Image 1 (spheres, rainbow, N blue to C red):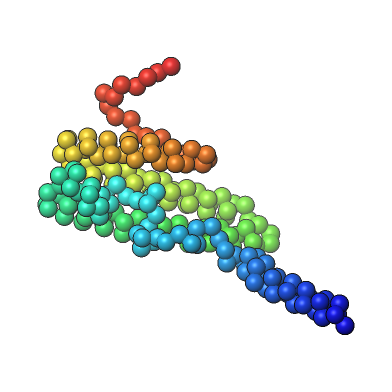
Image 2: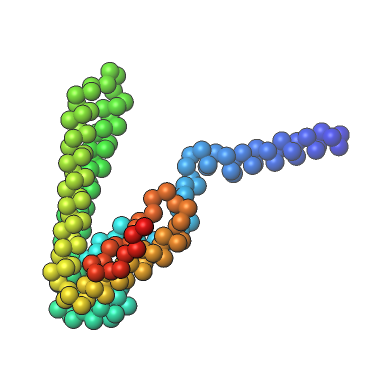
Length: 184
């Protein structure tokens, strides 16, 4: 009788463990990064627009930005992000369409290649928007402020490289004109 009770207990414990741990894991409930709070309302720090410096009071103070500069950067940032969101939305729609085409039977190669070209074009437009944002910052800041911003980027990326040394995609620091570079 004692062994029968023990067998029922272990069976119940195993069912509980499977229910609590394995089923949610297979359902994707424990994806990486779920426990990390995102303080930027959905924006990732790594992919933040260079126009986003107006949101960092310490950066505004260190660069010595005027109220007029902060206003101009803020307006340019929102305009940039609106355009970027529109492009990202179209890109997401094309990715979904690509999944549909790949799931069709038979697969239509020419349609997939045409869609791949559209996706490539949109990614190119997103890259151009990113460059336009960097250029907009250059137009709104003085030469001294740009130099300070580049120094911040250099230190920030160097520190990021140390923290993520084992990561596959590590960003390299920006090159500064006139900097003493050791070539070996």
